[in-house]
Image 1 (cartoon, helix red, strand yellow):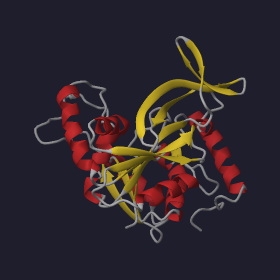
Image 2 (image 1 turned 180 degrees about the vertical axis):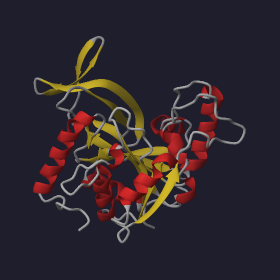
Image 3 (image 1 turned 180 degrees about the horizontal axis):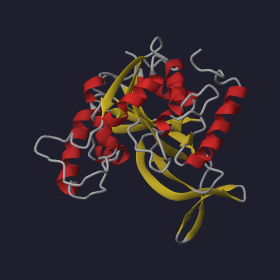
Image 4 (image 1 turned 120 degrees about the vertical axis):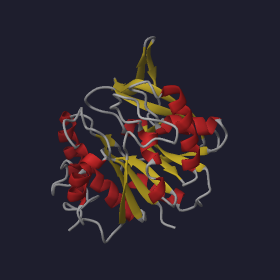
Length: 300
């Protein structure tokens, strides 16, 4: 059974100033997500599911077209504010989406096999898809042995300032025991450090961090639905409350209903949040193309 790639692509792009999910970054007009799909195909994934909003469906479908229809199956799921469990009603004035875990729940009807989930505007690297694909191929649909890619923190830093990363702690079997959010990580005098109120603390360059590339099976949906109901009971009237995948995963681990294997990768990650990030991402892609990692035109 080939695994599926689920792509979170419903974001508003407010800080970027447009639909960065389909903005051109590659030399032939490719979006970052196209490199992810290219890597997933090479790693043996059989389907890609885009989670989008209805109001961007026309533009998104036009962009995707039939670029990779002969290489991988394509399906869609839709994240809408009013798609809530029975007994809950959308609060008046709510505009903010319910978060990434709610978005993932929207894919339940179209995902019937082990799957990975990624952000549309992040570049994860070819090795990451191979490592995740190899792991997912071993699972059956009932397994709750979930996973996440652990990137070396040195491969996720920015030259434009500090970054926020979830630093992973593992047990002797590489199972996740804790993710600690460090909000100001950067390189200083050749060393990776994180900054807090009491000063700077060195961080191992190879410390694993989560970049929201995770692996699941369809068994996750039951647990997500239960957790979403609990979230809504407490937070439905909080206008900016969000139901995030990492928080839901943490609760599953603490409740003893799932484990999370941290998979090691030496891939380099980069992402796009602001319009100013585009030039750096284009440079990174150009370097990879020049090194022979990708063709200058992905689909020709």
